[in-house]
Length: 609
Image (cartoon, rainbow, N blue to C red; front, side, top):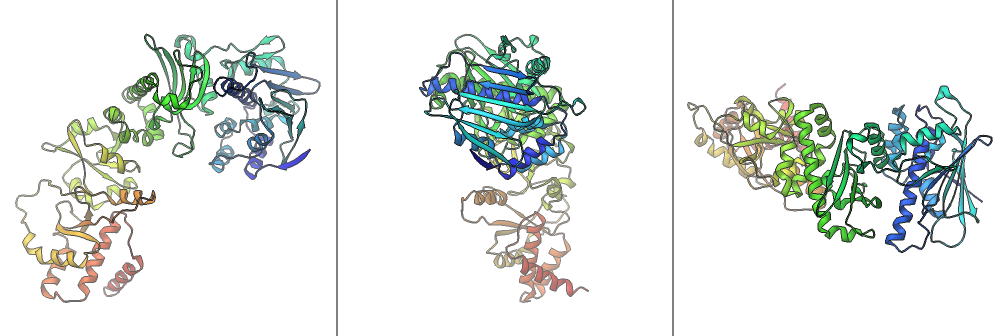
C-alpha cells in the first residue's frame, strides 16, 4: 500500500466538500452515476472503434445500500482505470481555471454542482462521506486492479486489488444523517429512487437496484416536446454540460427523408469559464441509432457556436465512424449547416420576442458569435442580423438595421470606432465632429471587433467606415474659411520633425475641441490590430499614421504663428513632439519614450507657473 498527497488545489476543493455548507447534497449520486455512464460509453466505443476485446453485451450500473454498515455502492462494468489513471484523475485537478472554480464555490452557497464543469464531480461524495473507497480495473489489461481510499483530508492510499472485476466500484461510507443540514439517509430505498428519477432517468444504460431498473432510459431527443417537462430537459442539460444553471433556451430538431437525424440543443444561460481558452472542450455529442458514438464532436458545430450544448442522433451513419471520416462526410456537413441555421434563427427569435433572454445571451456569448463573421461567409448576413452593438444613440445596444433607419439624410456609411472601453471611445478626439453634428457612431470594444470589421465590407449596401481611418467629409459651415494655405509651412515642418512617427500631416474636419488626432490611412491596418498580430508572433513593418490638426485650436494656431515668427526656435521641435504625444495618449496609445515626454511636459509647465 502507498500513501500519496493530493495536489494543493485538490486538497482545497476536498476541504470545501468535507465542510460543506451546500444544501443540495443529493447531487453526489448524480455525479457518480454520470461518471459510471461515461465509463460504459467508453467501453462500448472501444469495442466498436478500437477493436477492444471486451464484453459489452450487458452494460449497466448497479446501486447497493447497506443500512447497517451505512454504505452506498455504485458499480459499473465499464472501461475502468489503470493505477496511473486513478492517481492522475482523482489525486489532481489538471484543468486550467482551478483558482476560479475554488473562488466561485466559496461564493456559491447553493451550487456544489459547479465542480462538474471541471470534471471532478467525484469529489462531491465527500459532502456526505466519512470515507470513500474505489476499486477499479481497466478493460483489456492484464493483471490486477487498483484500490483507492481516502477520508477526504490531505492524503489517499492506493494499493493493488488482485480480484477486481473489469469496471469501477465506488463505496461511500456515509456520515450520520442530519436532515437540518440537508444530509439525508442515502441508504433509504425511496431516497435513492427519488434522486435517480430526478437526475438520471434519461441515462442510456439500466440503473439497477436489486431486481429493479430505476430509470426509463428514454432518449429525451426522441420524445415529443409535449411529453417532456422543462425539469427533465434541464436535468439532461446539466448532465451533458456539467453546468448547474438552467439553459436559456431549448432547441428540438427532427429531419426525415433521405437522411434522418434528431437533435436536442441548448443555449446556456452563462458562459463557461474556458469559453475563450484554446484547449477548451466543446462540440456536440454524436449518437447513431441511440448508441453513443462521440463526445465533443466539433464537426457538428462551428467554433463560433462552441457554447451550444446538446445531442445529435443520426440514423444512417456507421457505428465505428471516426473523427477523420466525420470531417469529410457529406451528411455530417449537411447536419452542421442545418444546425447553424436553426441556432441563428433561434437567437433571432429571442432578439425579436424576448428582450431579457436575448440580453443575457448577447452579454455571455456575443463576443464568441462575432467570430463567425470572420470564417463563415455563408452565414455572415445572418450573424449580423442577430448581432447588436453599443452606440452613441443611447445606452441600449442597436441592430445594424435600426442604425440604418436612423441614418441622417445623405449619410452613406455606417460609422464606427473601436477601443478598449465605451468611455475611451466616447471621449476620443475622433468623435468630436460626429457628436457635434449628430451622427451616430457604433462603439466596438470587443477584441474581435478589430478583426471582423475588416472582413465585412457592408451591411445592406451600407459600407462600414471607421471614423479613425481615412478622411471624413462631414458637412461643414459654408462660411468657414479654408485655412489650408496659411498652415502649409507648418504642416511641412511638422512632417519633417515627426518623420519617424508619421507618414503625413493635414488639417482635420473631425476635430472640434482637441488640438490633434492620429488617423490610419484608408488601406492601413489599425494600431490595435497591429498590436494583436505582434502578440501572436506575427511581426511586420511598423505602420505609420497621419497626424491631423485642428486649425481652430489655440495651440495649433499659436504654433503656426510661432513658426512664422521664429522658425529656428529650438523649442518648436519639442512642441511638435508634445503635440504628437498628446494625440497618441488621447486615443489610449503607448508612448515610445514616456520618460522623455514627461520631462518635456514638466519643463513647459514650469515656465507657466
